[in-house]
Amino acid sequence: MAISGLDPTQKAWSLIDEFKKFAFKGNVIDLAVGVIIGGAFGKIVDSLVKSLIMPLLSVVLPSQQRYQDWAWTLRGQQVPYGQFLAEVVNFLIVAAALFFFVVKFLGWLTKTRKDEEARPPAPSREEALLAEIRDLLRAQGEVGPGARP
Image 1 (tube, rainbow, N blue to C red):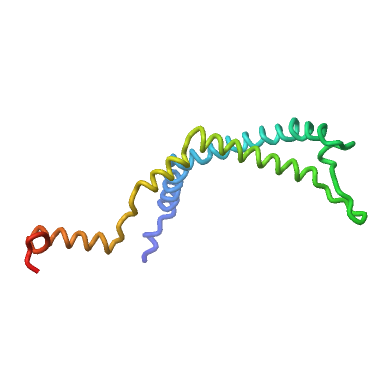
Image 2: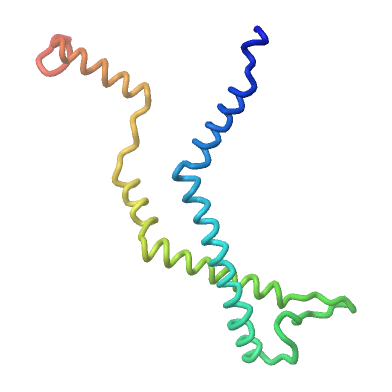
């Protein structure tokens, strides 16, 4: 391989072109928008749990502390569980919101399952070749009704 064949500027521009094709595909941009919106939605749900739900839970459940300070004491060691409880509630709210939006509002999962059940599985490569051979033989009149065995 000759040294003249190694043009670094051409390789650099080729790399930049490949990156543009990758980075500006529709799927990558859609994914980035989804991640950003998901992060914002997560902050909203986190605020809902920490500012409204858990303080209301603190009022309902008798306690002298805020929910973040809830803890068990075992053999002199504190086991804080309040923040974990808040994170579990946060997860359940996010999961419920996604369920209602994706499954009930958009109906994606039910449509996908119905489509998969209605469609027969695609034939294997061997089955497709056998069907092609059968069709060719039928065209020649060697297979089918009335053909000689």
